[in-house]
Amino acid sequence: MSLEPFADSRSLTLGVELELQIVNHHDYDLAPSSRDLLRLMEKVKLPGNVMPEITESMIELCTGVCVDHAEVLAQLTETRDALVAAADRLNVGLCGGGTHPFQDWSQRRIFDKPRFHEISALYGYLSKQFTIFGQHVHVGCAGPDQALVLLHGLSRFIPHLIALSASSPFVQGTDTGFDSARLNSVFAFPLSGRAPFVTRWEDFGTYFDKMARTGVVKSMKDFYWDIRPKPEYGTIEVRVLDTPLTIEKAAALAAYVQCLARWLRIERPFEPAEDDYLPYTFNRFQACRFGLDGTFVDPKSGVHRTLREDIEATFAAIEIHAMELKAEDGIRLLRGELAGTGNDASWLRGLHDRERLLPEVVRRQCLRWAGRPA
Image (cartoon, rainbow, N blue to C red):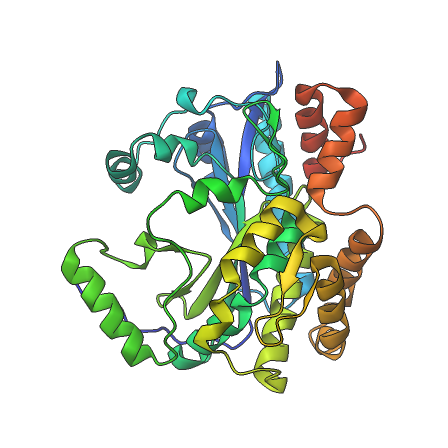
């Protein structure tokens, strides 16, 4: 099996995927209602689509191809509203957050789809523990070599994206001490982590062919990398973000990725190199564990600073690109969180400190996702 050709795509276009929690209104535990939701959504015309995920307590919404922050937000809003209306008919709730705070993974059911059953057969209990919820952002690339260069350039900012999006402090009823505990479940998979450092599609094809010959992979879907090429779409896919608590935050994070991509392509502030990955695992752990207060090691200079400081520096660097891409509203939202309330993990912990009841936390997550006042 060979690597499929890289499709034509307009540079810097966006696509967003969001995995959502489906919960009951009794105790706000996860509810296996994705099939019923999908049945209702079949009758609704959407700008993107809605799909099942690996277990029946999850559902994924996707935008179509978008050009800017406003279009992402408009499509997410339309799909969110339709999904919430369908969920109301079924008397279930929907919410963001990278993990459900107290669900028991052993109670999950695998969605009846051949690929999901294959994953379950291969990975065993890990497949049910994969009931976690992330945001994926696709960035259009004019060609495959450009895609690989952008992939490695954006890899430097993986910790920034983790820290900004982190919304999974609770697992199995316990505060893990991590801002993004979700990614610990992703890291358990053998083909997670980072892509190999190649910057030509020909060389990437050689790598893929070698992996395919071993029988370890059959398609790009078998790689759970933090960023991976998606040749069928002509994009790269950023996969490390937790699902935010609001669609506004999701659109803002997509805008930030788009602005970083434009800055990297036009200004070329550094040339990607294999040595950029020397502090990669350390930086990623710091972001997962400590969020915005984690330590970031600059791969070129070796200078240590907080992620909060380095993210603020990127906001300054991409300012003109945010203007060109009409992304100012999204960046403004992220800057406000950086200076004030912090990430979604901070909001969840603060709410739990006040309420001392995780079902109440989930109830309030549902209200935030639906855009309803708490």
